[in-house]
Length: 363
Ligand SMILES: NC(=O)C1=CN([C@@H]2O[C@H](COP(=O)(O)OP(=O)(O)OC[C@H]3O[C@@H](n4cnc5c(N)ncnc54)[C@H](O)[C@@H]3O)[C@@H](O)[C@H]2O)C=CC1
Ligand SMILES: O=C(O)C(=O)Cc1ccc(O)cc1
Image 1: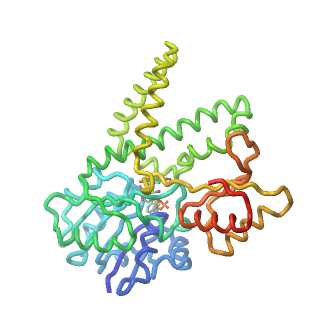
Image 2: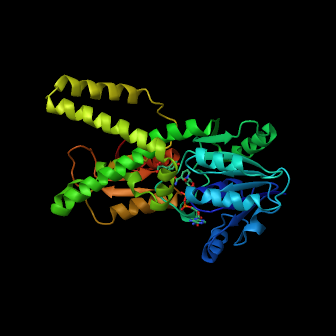
Image 3: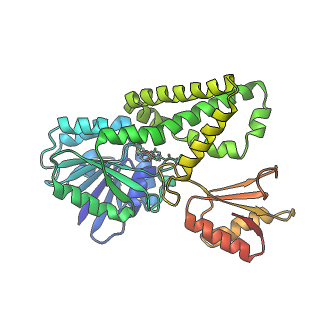
């Protein structure tokens, strides 16, 4: 039996557990740091067993996944280094930053165990085991950062296990990972939070700001609703990279202010054209680190119960709806009900179903 231990069965740990549980010859043990969590992991069918004992989860494990907030990873790795782990045990983590934990692992004596850093580059603003899904990592990138000179067999064993996530594995150096992921994921999260705060401050003076900000503004700031503790730890762990990125950001904003101060219309036009051009060349059908929502807009006749009926019809067919919104203004979107899906497959099935029922569906 291959024993897989998951420390921290939340969004990411729970999703990994679901990718492994029930596979031939595998047993998944979840470690919980609170008694009420352990019972929830098992009752939701995410793990085969759950324990509050660090030792019971770790001892005899072939693979150990550390899926706790970044600020707790080093403490967990220290505790593991003090245990008589199974010879050949592979320890990995899922933290959103990689340099700090790589540095920590290098300084520790893990005996016959090997540490290989990891980062599944998919997730959402939700957290906790309730949000876990076996499909979360499908088609996403999954970065592994093995230490230089680490056992190639261990790398291949982890690589092989992770095939169950259906993610694309990419091997990378931890520092390079933190610079790139800092720019494409951590920076957008900071910008989203700052943008929401700016509008919140205006809204305190005049509540029309939030009234009119529905729809698009909510979409582009979705990631500002991410878990505060998870993101505190990520940003503090990637602090030096973030400070440099934010200086570049400030310079970009200052350039934009310069264009406005000098009423440089050509400059503004060029900035939009260049951004549109680069954006147009980004891979489209790939799952990126910030998860898109797949939207459908439909015209619905104005009579009671129709929205409930649509939700029920989708639910009856197992089509997972992530969000539903009535758009009151028809100025920019030709439709009235917006349905959002996290999976493209759900989006496609919903479109077929609704078109078949003669709803006008705008894609
Ligand atoms: N949220 C996301 O979309 C992604 C998160 N990650 C990384 O995955 C890790 C886990 O994040 P999520 O699953 O989103 O968070 P989560 O909040 O859903 O899960 C965290 C788990 O750690 C446990 N935990 C929380 N505080 C703890 C503490 N003080 N001591 C011990 N255990 C504690 C919780 O009980 C929970 O089981 C983080 O390191 C994060 O950087 C990686 C990729 C995506
Ligand atoms: O909510 C989103 O789309 C995200 O950006 C999810 C996410 C959060 C943290 C990561 O390290 C990777 C992905």
